[in-house]
Image (cartoon, rainbow, N blue to C red; front, side, top):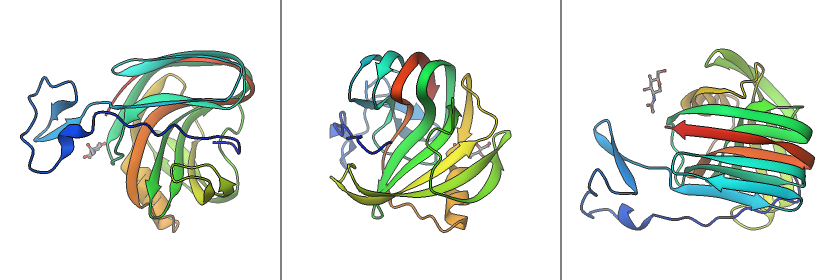
Length: 220
Ligand SMILES: *[C@@H]1O[C@H](CO)[C@@H](O)[C@H](O)[C@H]1NC(C)=O
């Protein structure tokens, strides 16, 4: 996110994850059965706004947001622990002003990394820094960018950290499936290592008097 961004890091629904705790019922609000393991339902809401009008409505499996005259904001929905899950999203984004982007967005710690898999933007969006290469995934080519944020707010306070940014050339505001493992592998090949995964969401971000709207459902 851009320089002035500060992240809301409230995490909910982690109480049932203690090792050794009994498996929650399949209809628990926090878990669902996925294959042969329990996968956490979408339990993380990203909700950061700095100014202007941003009307954000998170739901149990997605979100909608309308915005006008917006300064930096990042809103979305996902999981408090990132994994190499395949994330399928469906919906729409319309941009009428400023910079608007839609990404799989997350963080790792040790090393501290802010990452983007940018699926749509009305300009260059999150792409900045050094371009390290490109690779193909999910029906398009993605360019890999590497950018250092110096003394910027993060999930570990104001500090210096790197951004790993995959930018999809064939933008798809309507959605699709993101094979996140392909990005993690491509980044690793480029020397970009992730640490322990923190939250992972589908997010709509805007800045610079951003105007427009987004509405998505997602699963993963
Ligand atoms: C993601 O999808 C691919 C097929 O495209 C599959 O091979 C892989 O196992 C899936 N990964 C996860 C974590 O479900």
